[in-house]
Image (cartoon, rainbow, N blue to C red; front, side):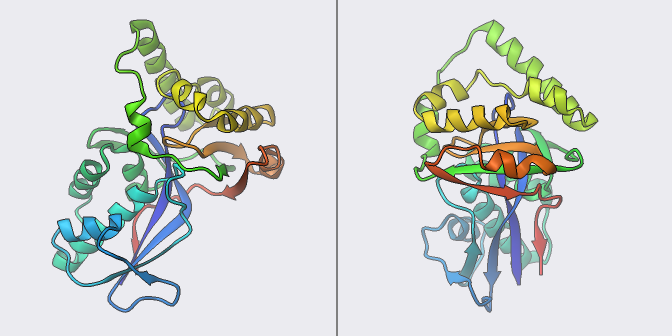
Length: 268
């Protein structure tokens, strides 16, 4: 069988560790006979370690265009796929709440694995998750630089505390952003998609990513943010201007015009 899981972009604006979006950039995992382009995984691959931890047995083969270390949910998608494959092998079914808990525990946070499991846009608080439909006619435009980021190293650089006012403003913007997504209010999305919790620290070490966010907003993006821990950025962009936004980014990376993946895990 083949388990397919979409990539994700987490930390949407002020939604640090709680808002994610599934991106139509799949991770394919084959159990048994591999399809033509799939290659066998070693024991250190995150899909294989998740599969083995969940009691799976036998070889695994994978095929994906999700770049690792770029903030597009490679490890999250791989772990979700490995856990789902183990569950299907053992019971013939996937128990989604259990899968979310297990994947979030392995990943260390729930936002990107929730998006990969359920698809579309997800809001999470630990293992509680609510799925939102993406406003119509929005694409996801990503800018992917040549450099990589270690999530663990990046997290260790974040401040250990913030001021009360910063926390209140972050909560307010996050609430408005979720409401704006649900209502399809693109102007409100743009105004609310600003972060003071993790982006200032991370963007100080990634000036090209900061330029890419600025360029996306200046060319009409409805929202733009540092994808995961970076260094990639992602933006919600109306389809008719997606090409113009993609051409505005710094030359130190490349862009992709993608779509929101409406569904999460699929099995064939």
